[in-house]
Image (tube, rainbow, N blue to C red):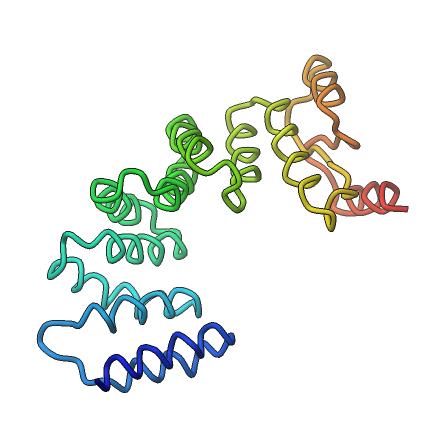
Length: 219
């Protein structure tokens, strides 16, 4: 059928990185009173990848009402809200997705990002631990854990996760770790060094100071 052919072509174009062409293929299909999930789901995904979040929100807001049992629809809606920094509606969308797909590491990871953005790192960490159990090599998991641990004041754990992320990739294993923090007490400083920080910088700091120290580390 025309829908299947255009959807297949859009998939191939997206794989080649031709997102605009892929979007045009799906947008050219007539939209009925009831949206076709074969069209709206990949179209929303393409909108998110091409940063057309308002368009994604528009079609997914309608799709989630018509297909309330589709975890993918709720996920795509949440992804668009998250990208815009609209944490409350993003949380609602991911909550619906989680209720339908509770074992999904991807949904849990996004939920953790939302909770971190809302200033709730303890709850975010619980979701990240579940992601770690299900998919220990999940992309960006270590960096997200590092960021969350920092927000909780767990400097050593944050440095450990950051170093794990860097050393896992040969392209980044030589990158030094600069700890930028508002904690100026000696105990925090020693913990930072013990955890393997290459440099320690206190807030507030001048950008040139960071640049100079980074250049020194890289030379």
